[in-house]
Length: 394
Ligand SMILES: *Cc1c(COP(=O)(O)O)cnc(C)c1O
Image (tube, rainbow, N blue to C red; front, side, top):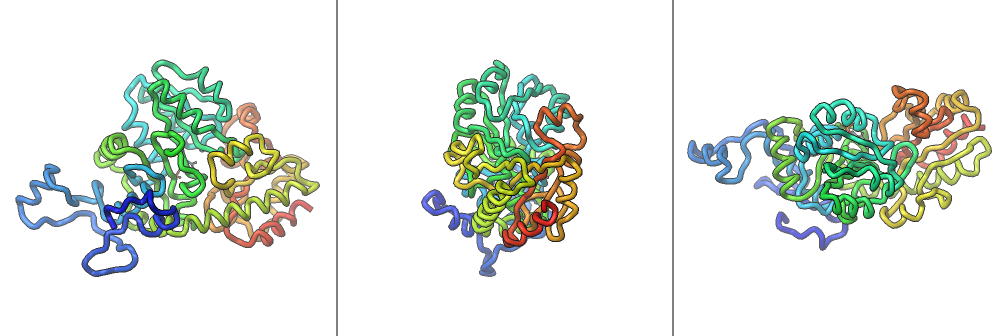
């Protein structure tokens, strides 16, 4: 089905079927091509392949059939022309920046992004000659005020972790367009099941496949999705020279993850909503952050640009850090870890872990208080997740 137009199919079908190229063995499930290089039929064919005169595999840093299956499946799910798989989510971000920016290009990024992304931008991208500024994620006017003539990229991730603030993708796509800049969206928390940024006007979508795409916390990987020129030529060109490519085994795990992604995302969202509603009425809880709650300031925007509200729920407890830590230490079931997008529910105290390295004033500015806890709601029964939280809250 290699020339199928996947736009004619529902996402659930694309997720199971797109990208598979069966071999002569007739395998039903996707094969793993665990090979670093490929052989040629003759010296002439080798020469032609090396000079790109004829298509075909040469070496797995360039192309690998198992990796290609994952790339084509994810591209179809995001509605993009091309996908390039990378060794991690951070490698996807780095490859996109290096391939799309030249020294002097300015980057305007969202507040509240993944810590390593902020670190990469501040410490390394600036050193490459690309100044970076940050705009308030949920305030389009702030983006408009901070955009410069030399701004070539707007970069964001929505909703943010842990406070679930949203960026208005459509409005920021228009702003980027007016200024001749690219809009890059890290779609890790929503996945194409909940949100398709390219449909809303974004130019490039980034993934950390490590999270919901794997879905069971096994492999590290990433991807870049977009058009043929920027992603298919520019990002791919950087990757084949610089090397942070995805391994065939990881690509196989991620392809199988995509097959069950819609089912899992639906369950993550249902359970997260249930947990959020329960937390909201709990006397020991002072605030709940979840876009599915009617009192979330961007509930309406979320309904417009996402098909559901996601699996991340954060909340504040009365009694500061001591009370927050008590909730964590009273759990018997939940995993005390900062990873997310796993079948197993995780609980974390952002102020002393993911956001522990920034100063107290910076943390307060970011809204990460000592009484804040973050849940990445997994696939266990929500009844048991709630019972586990109740232990430390009562
Ligand atoms: C985890 C994460 C990344 C980085 O992905 P890795 O696979 O860990 O390199 C990037 N963006 C977001 C939103 C993430 O959660």
